[in-house]
Image: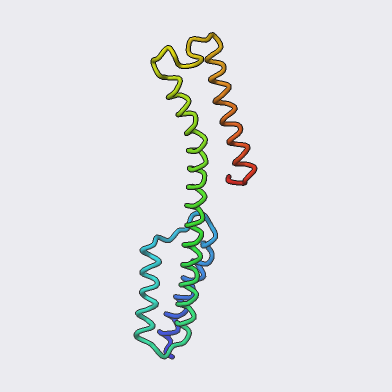
Length: 141
């Protein structure tokens, strides 16, 4: 194996170690395009030098790192969607209550009552608190 080929392999190793270093951090400094170019360079090297077994191992490591990074990104997205769902579920009944008591009819219960506002406010607070307790108890957030 020539010195130039060994230098290329060492450069691939350095890049993989750099990716390994940042894989667990929230700010992954490489764009998807950079990772794709790196993988395609490794595959081009593999096509040019099919007898080199080291590149096979490096390609497998890179694919594993790419899978780990993608899994971590999916976990973040799932967590954010879970929080969005919980908050939406908490505010949906409040929108319903507001719609019910916001109608311009005299027959709506508690509208003309002196304590209607406070009963409505208490109902909203109790609803939000009970849903929050339910979600916390079930570890939804």
